[in-house]
Image (cartoon, rainbow, N blue to C red):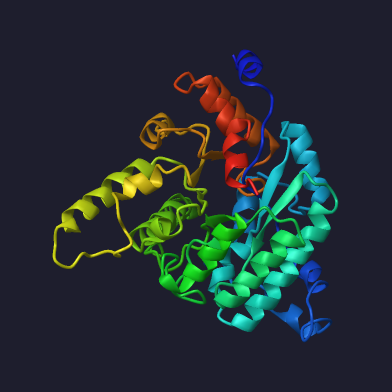
Length: 364
């Protein structure tokens, strides 16, 4: 079955969301004054913790990986073994970047991380593209770093922290304080990705096992940020802005279309609307605009329904998530699972696996 589907769909696979594993000692080499060469920095982690879970301990118990040294060679070997053409690399520890309290350190670390990614991955092989960290703790500096990352480092977009746990970047991403950043991202034709990972401050602390936390953290964070950006009017104010909500699957998207439309209509006739005056149409219209993107997972039974509600599969991205909860064997299985589906059209499969969605999102 897989071989037959592969022949019809095509063998091309493009990864829209893979990950790096940062090593502070390596990033240390790329820090600029006044931090350059001061080994006192290595006494503390460069990035805040994602939460109270030690991911390495969890991976050790599951046995997914025997080693977690992730460099350019590791990634290229993975791409070749799985049959993936290229990837877009996201941080791991850096997914908590928005929690950094010190704006000055956030600016310095963003520059160092982006230089490290460019030098250690993109310059080794251009199949390894990357998205930049930008310090929204200081919006003017975030704009400067976005420009630099695109023009000098050939990044394909920027990544924002999905949940900052009421630290560092303390406003939701729809807040008008960030509108100058979105205005410049729209002008630069820059893809803006929102990626979860931080579970703190979402009400998940009472769970005793990581599976429950991981299952809920990503969609909860994305629901909150999508709601904020739509009801604050971001997508009306910046209609050409492209934003992706990653690693939460697709099943939550139709749910949010219904919930937000209900809230929109419930309050539209009131004297004082309970959302921004910039919201000019039902929220589902913004979600279906073609400028909002979502990563998907091969075995999601609800994906067909999400595609029907969105009106297209060209806004869905295949995400390997390597090396987090996956290895080469699991990635091959997920690709085969998607190719074997009988409820998706050949065009849907080509859009998702063949990189149409990836190209549309990172089109710059």
